[in-house]
Image: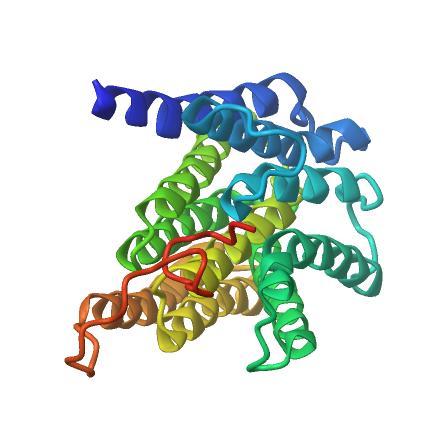
Length: 301
């Protein structure tokens, strides 16, 4: 029964919601200028993730103490701030919007570190590095789904999303990995919609995907057992996928192959490092939310 619920709520539901949004609102003609058609993938993916999250965990209030339960707020912020964006916007403006989304995500997910009084490294540095990393992941995700010929990039984005979810699950946080899997299933729904709405652009969904997976990696690192090198390799893989897509924009199939070769290799190494036992043989102290523990407490205040 639990397996059926996990598949239904965590995979099928978000895929269907994302698919339906693009099918209903996605562009039907080449170069269709409607803003809603451009925004539909972001709306669809955001709603798909929120629906899956609530179906799995139920409502937890406006600002839950558990930072994992704040992921729907991150998705909502990415969608709402995308209203300030548009197809063909200048890069500087898009970076500003990305930074605003990343700043909101950092405030939502990292605020328990302030409450616990963590001092090393300095919290300002932690927030800054998170914002920078989140912006890079959002830019890489958006680069994978250009406004023209997005299918190859959408496939790569689905592969990347699934792999990052797996890294979280391998880092001592299956619950966060499951929620990442729900977002990846939403990407799968968007990809399937492209077979029907061949003129649709998934560009607006890149920011939502990037914000969610930057948050998933952040939760796995700060509140679970993700190692620094696994985190770095995951971000590097996202940049490799996005960089290959940008460098070979006119040859998307080749860009997909190169991204899979380089990014897939990095993800493989990350998975190996996540599975490898820690060098220290000393048994770690059991996690406790009352002892400044960061192992699977997800920031309980």
